[in-house]
Length: 101
Image (cartoon, rainbow, N blue to C red; front, side, top):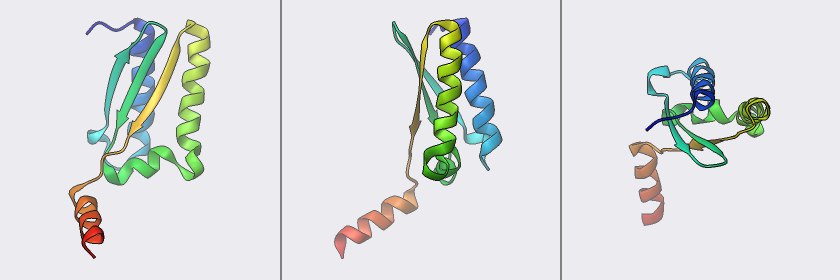
């Protein structure tokens, strides 16, 4: 998949910010979906680090999105951040047990 220079710069920016915030930087994964009007950046981190990326009341995630919007103004392109929450096996077992009770 060929991505634009601007999208690659935004990918690197979000990737570096995410790696700096989490406890397991090796598990940071960023997927890019190119659209006509802009790009979607899908961020995945370890389940235990999701809260660190979102932050209290969503402030950290909002701040990252604000940076993407500001850069998007410069490049005349829209960048969106999606934070993908993946629940670990322990969460799935707890959910299954609560449904049985």
